[in-house]
Image 1 (cartoon, one colour):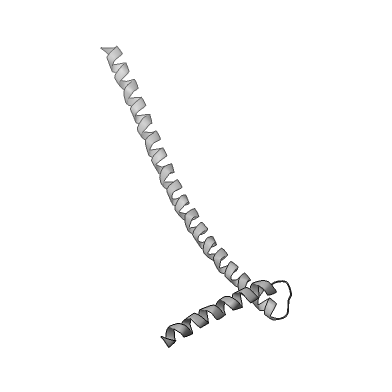
Image 2 (cartoon, one colour):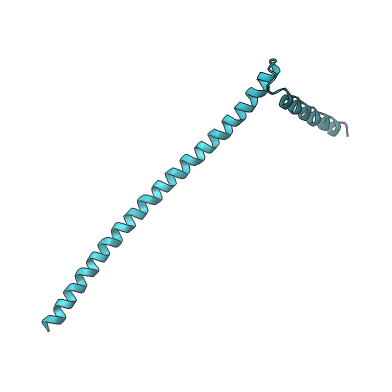
Length: 96
């Protein structure tokens, strides 16, 4: 019977170590989920900041070209033409 008892003890020890490993892996998994959530939040904030900076850059390009810079005159003319078309469309809608 002592052989069976030794086998049972060995199995109990192995099961106990498995449970310990499972708890460790679950804790690690939870920590990684938290870290992933934080990283996703940071990425989202940085994406919003990039979009805001792109808009500011475009505004600055237009303002610079209006001040007499030759670098972005074409883009500014296209933007002004686009705005004029939108205004014309709005006026046409109001006229109807």
